[in-house]
Length: 374
Ligand SMILES: *Cc1c(COP(=O)(O)O)cnc(C)c1O
Image (cartoon, rainbow, N blue to C red):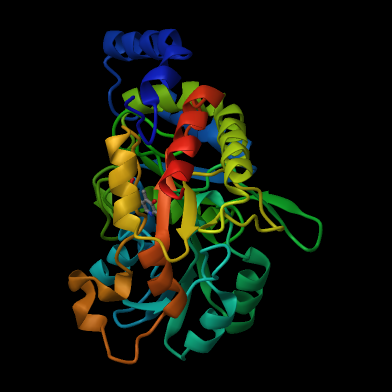
């Protein structure tokens, strides 16, 4: 057995012809940059998400950086985010000379804890960056309420939650990434909507921000060779847009398959006292970018070794909290203590999850995990 975390090979089988035809068309026309597929994909994604503007860019990290560049923040302004995330979220804040202010997460959903956000607000706070971790939305009702009261921007990091629905207490249902002022996503191959290289996008319902963002991704240019502000070069390749157009049509099917796989795991592990299965947050659907278990008093490395010996890929997202990263030591102080984040970093493990799992493979995975505990 050799079971990967994601299976892009089998996923490709169903869309191969469409992708190859699209590639051939790009090769024949030579429209490698900003070809018609890029515009078509932006419109199709905007339509899918129910958001006014989708601006594609080169990757999810750029999406976050450009979103933050569009908000006129000043050096030293504070941006509140979670320390239980991929580094990109925090990295761009410090790259722009802003100050990342990390707060703890909720023990059940792993998402940023609104009570901790409230305590971290100072007169210099300008924005909040919730990360919809592993496929489930942070509590956007409370985050938007806090943001509105304190006049803060909200940039959603939706890299792991494309297609996830958030159920507002008002009854409104909105897609992750379309609730705050700006949403950012990544199309890295292993994401729920991934291309075959790097890609990303920025969403907003605010037309002024959309114009500014479109200009920033193109060297701050509105009229050719007239540059109104300092921008970057961040584009989605036409070839990648071809892949994304083909996959977007299947995104809901992919996400449902991930949920079915998660249900299978939940059921298999329900009587194992050493494992806490992922909690479902009642205000959000879960698109299971990762299926992440919490282990109770288990030697995690020994479990990993056991799974590796069985040919079952597994991973720890994330082993080191952001406040303990060497790269961020300039922000560190001894008072920083995020007990939930720290405990999760020590006790989580993620199992293979993707759109192509079947009962046979999953049975082998769950049997192998349970075998470790007997
Ligand atoms: C993948 C990811 C990113 C960065 O995306 P890239 O396309 O790899 O730059 C940012 N935030 C989170 C939470 C991610 O998972």
